[in-house]
Image (cartoon, rainbow, N blue to C red; front, side, top):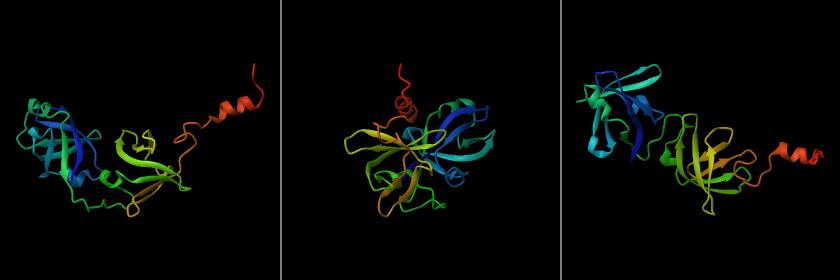
Length: 186
């Protein structure tokens, strides 16, 4: 199975290094020197990592055969793809690969069906489940411990405890309800 592990950003310096947006929880395993990665677009690769280092909190990589800024800049926005055994699991039992989460049924803690996960959106602050409801609409569920209370891969189920309004479009905002109830109308 192929998984996107990073996206190449802008060139850094003049010796062929590039910044990368890491999309794996295991960069030391997937993005180490000697790793050979497929690419999207495929015509750019495969790319072999020559060196890697962290600079100001960002991972910088240099690839074999790319030794100047022009070559590095030509790689911008290329996706780096690693071959992963579909049965492989992350070392941390509370971590999951995207392919393990796609198509899981999503239910609330009381067993109410919400839908199924169709996509994982990786944002800078947190990941989101894109959940397709039975009626075809989508809802976005933050993949955080306070909301996603359990993942059961054997049962193919994600259990959520959503705050009011997250999955129920008809939920009232407490402050507007309180002002109506207190008779503050003009």
